[in-house]
Length: 466
Image 1 (cartoon, rainbow, N blue to C red):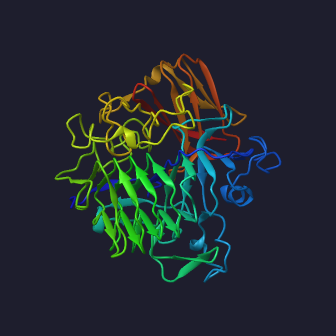
Image 2: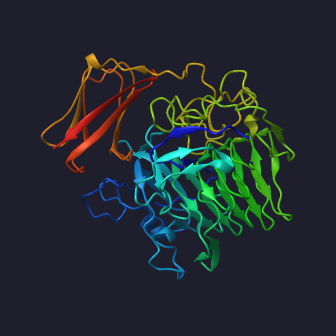
Image 3: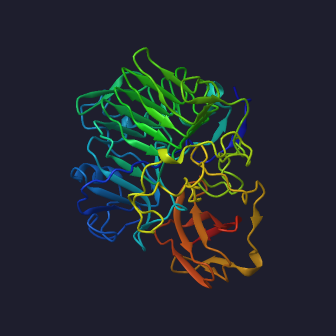
């Protein structure tokens, strides 16, 4: 059991989902962008994108591809069977039951995925989660009593289903009774993160489940479902039964190259369920294919967002602690699915997925690391500041954020509300001298601009938008 940790995280309950890899017959793309305030909002293009995800999920035909821009998205609908309490906003959840290609973290300007800018699916409907303390059975998250019971529920998904480039956050399955979806029952006390029900068995790759609460299966609950989980991390989740994963009613997930730590009981199986796989590490699960962890294997699990305070950047605390960490070079590269989306644009779709959760290259010709992150010897806990004397950051009268000065590395600018919500983001190329970010959709007020670059440098500045 991990010792109690105290750390503050805004917009927590992080679970980043990066699934998929089977080839589907793709129909025309459907586009979703929370910032698409003009246009027809019918999903036909980036300029006419849906601003919510659920309408796109409802409208999509089987095997369609949905592309989602960076930003934060909240559940807007209660699943379509009659709910127990139609006025209970906590019953809202993202939901789908057809094999879709769902891709997040898109940059609408380039129509490409940019994993430095995340699409966030958040159950924190009121946007007020605050402080996390403890871990596993002692995990406490303040102000989450009004969060959605589940962020994402799925049913009847085949292994062809793909979900790539999302962070799933903010579920709190502490309720009573159930909700219904396509005639299936989803209990309100099971899985704040991802709830797979009845033959719903997608591929889950390069995924982080962290800070989720439930009675059963804090990070994930499987009922009659057997997903494939590869190179994923379950840390700082909590439930009386199965803080990381609870498998019920003949569920049999296959898990490879994954790490479980700080969840209380990492994995719990019902009498009819099982867990198989290999090259996995756990604090307390002793099934076949799992090696016991005697100590924290991560860089800084007490500070999972790292020094820059931003998930899925180069200083994240859930990376292997060192080259000698037990999870470093401990995975099997042959278990990674094929790079059918050609993430590295080398026109080789038969090789394994070549990147980890934050874009680090995996050493495919050697042993990959276990977990969602690949060890990077260049990452350090102390993050050097970007030279502020070389940059001028200000807002123009047209609500445009201007960053003037020479950038010596690829640099991302994220704009956050004072509550920690990511409200705008853009990445600029090396040697750019004058860069701008449209913030016209933002209300007048004070915001935080956080910049970080490929040289592991950061800069934070408070900005007043008039």
